[in-house]
Amino acid sequence: MSYYSGCLDSHQPHFLEACFLCRKTLACNSDIFMYRGNTPFCSKECRQEQIEIDESTEKKSWKMSSSSSRSIRKSDPKDSTPNKSVWRVWL
Image (cartoon, rainbow, N blue to C red; front, side, top):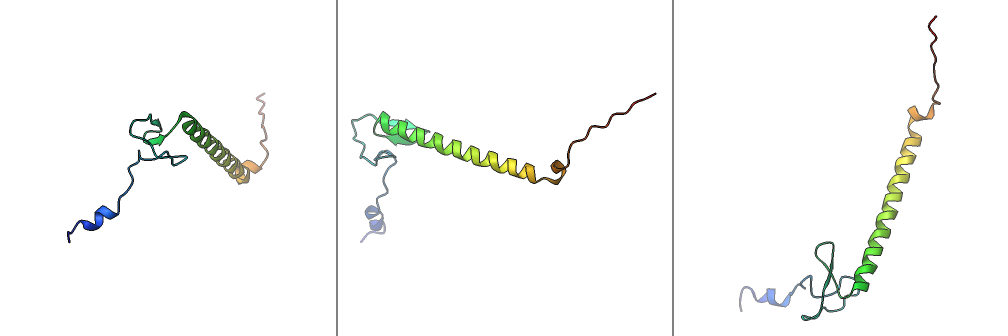
């Protein structure tokens, strides 16, 4: 029994073995469509779907952070007092 015998059974898949979205096995002689560095897809359609998912998620995240910053500004005590203009007249 070898010291390394356990490592052969615990095969970790290579990141280019399957489509990131549909998990379809990527064939050796087929095109692989990449997105954001090292994310593989089996087709343009799968890649486009992931791009749309990411854009939607980013927009939701941006809206949430924008609305939370607005609520923080509204609760700021110095912003709750009305802004009054003072005019000085020199005679």
